[in-house]
Length: 158
Image 1 (cartoon, one colour):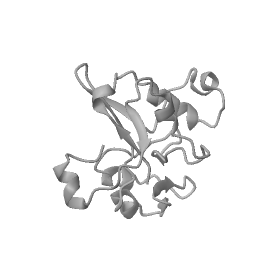
Image 2 (tube, rainbow, N blue to C red):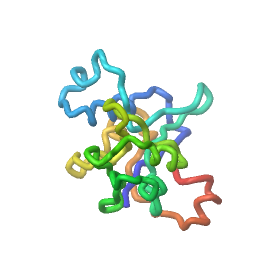
Image 3 (cartoon, rainbow, N blue to C red):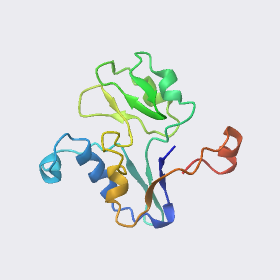
């Protein structure tokens, strides 16, 4: 399955992926109108400092703790992508606490959570964060999913 991966050595820490993500998930076609005068709430976050930067987004785990922890059934897996049903979310934040990567966050709606859904409505194109990355530090590709024991040996999936 294709997933978003980050090549940290190429990340400039410019945060453009965050802006493209926020705009893509705003429901508005025009980036300026979707972001101007608003606090952005992207589903991808750039972390780091001047020496190393990297983007953090949902890893769409094979055995997702966030889905298991969701008491309302608002998170589910559809064709390998973990998606949220905002109408079912009760704002308990169990999924936020369950995600070991910190990839489930608050949305603009009070108490409702959001997470990367790989821009599933993007008609098969790359997610907005990937398309907007000027240095190609964020990629959308199938690298195969390592077995559980291999994940720790690799230092985590990236």
